[in-house]
Length: 304
Image (tube, rainbow, N blue to C red):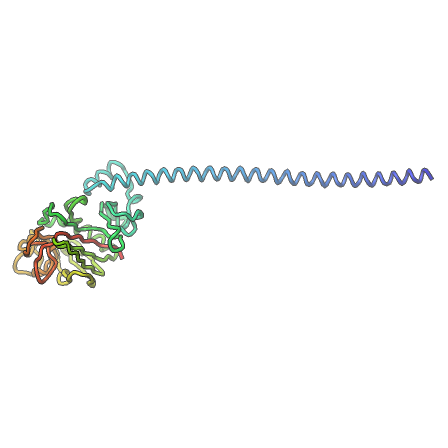
């Protein structure tokens, strides 16, 4: 009887020991799984930290580069002539495509001012003034007059290459206009003010300027605005200056009107004429009916 009970107890102990062994094995397996999970998490965290550090370094580098480019851009915007720009390119070995815009429409800051413009990769970049407020912005100013401080009665070479200062009165240059309008479609806006303060404007849906070989022939789209269509009759005309008579008149319109323009016998407008507060054919005017002198002209093109 006692032997039977002892054998029964022994069996129970064996069962308990087997169960405990199984439990220990299960616990060991779970602990091993937890250990592996912790190890994997540690590796993941380490990798994440490494990625974060790399991203922070990249962000810092990008911010540094962006800051340098912004500073460089601000420095270049202070330049007023393409000779200064050429010297800057040589002295700095700067690849200007990184800080230039294809047009004023694509200039990211959307603030009016001087910027580097490079219409295509093959074109030389130049300093241009972008108007980003009037008529929706995105305009490149190519003619600006408001006080008569700059003489606009100039020769062919000067009108081809440009003259004046973007800090004052200026003419951008026919060659730049040709390159810009040949690369992509542009529209034209002409702003005018009389000496009494009255403001008018003329807008043309398209403008394209031919090459120098074509004497910078004027191609023009449809007109709209509050001013007269002072340019329509000049469509398909060649540019004329004091030393290059391309108009259809028996006389030199550039000499007779003391300016330079796409004259036609001599035509209806003379925005590059003499700055004067009087009625005269040599004055800055934009009318076929009278020659009332203008106090302000600004001519701009915008990519369409």
